[in-house]
Amino acid sequence: MEKGADVVIIGGGIVGVSIAYHLTRKKLKNLLLLERNLLGEGSTGLCAGGIRTQFATDINIRLSLESFDFWIHFKELTGVDPEFRQVGYLFLASSPETLNLFQTNVRLQKSYDLPVELLEPEEIHHRWPFLRWEDLVGGTFCALDGYAGPHEVLSALVQMVRQQGVKIYEQTEVVGLSIKGDRVVGVKTQAGDIETRIVVNAAGPWASEVGEMAGIEIPVKPLRRQLFFTAPFCLSDKPVPLVIDFDQGWYFRPEGRGFLLSGPLDREPSFRRTIDRHAKVEAAEKAMVRVPVFQNARIAGGWAGLYEISPDRHAILGPIPGLEGFILANGFSGHGFQHSPAVGKAIADLITQGRIPRDVLQLSIERFAKGRTLEEPLTAFKE
Image (cartoon, rainbow, N blue to C red; front, side, top):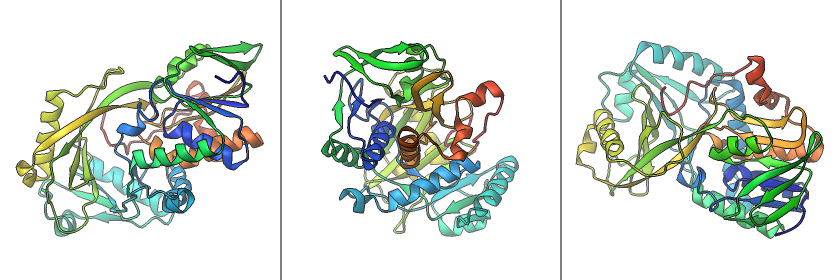
């Protein structure tokens, strides 16, 4: 274990690795990345890999747009195919309240020149006849959106940062922070202490635990969410979008020759990553409600991962007032994978140039104390 580093990043998911990648792009190489388990084991490797521009707030749309170029050119940058499939995102509404929300969102999204369509139920039925549509009141679709492979993306970036000299230690848990006066001066691990003047908390579901080491309350909680996949199953000879049945709180997308089905999101915080039979049943029931032909499909398996949820479903980014050298990149609420390119660049700019994009400043942890929280209703799961 090295005795010192310019920057220590805590967390080996896509956000931490993206920060390391963007720091190396700025020629900063004396970096350490510490992961308590295995790389991507917390959230990244177990997520659905969605990439979308359809959000309900300016900042989330901007983070998506700033990340989009990275996804489009990922293969050119890394030599690895991220398996970015632009099949589109289809949001479905079965209540007037949800349709009103969608209509408001579309106006915002179109102000960014996004090719978002507001669809009538009949048009949804015409385009995707496998969907049960009689109870729908409308929906939205954006052909830019889609999904990529979290494993492929993370592996490619890890390889690149290692080639640039970043030292990565897996199964190395941070057990404390060294603080002198009003600044961080080191990180304590089970393998030894490391001197540093900059620590980035990118610990995903464990963000609040790292915050406690600095005497700071970070309002992020881990919630288990379960995903299931079907055996090979043909639904259509045309591309199938990622479909979010908003009022059911359920989604599905293609996965190999079959489909990925969302299970429930736990209500109580925990670090559990087991799958439950009742969750499998719920996923199957919701699937057959919206896609009746799924009654002929077979669920072949599943897995559980962790969401890192913030109170307003927005990321918590930037420095901590009163504690120099401690930087947050937490609380992505299911959007960390898709926003990791923009977040990595923003945190790298903050570290190397002392500045962060003005619009990202609204994601500071200070917003909670000042009553300036944001609300992102377009999440994959309803409360």
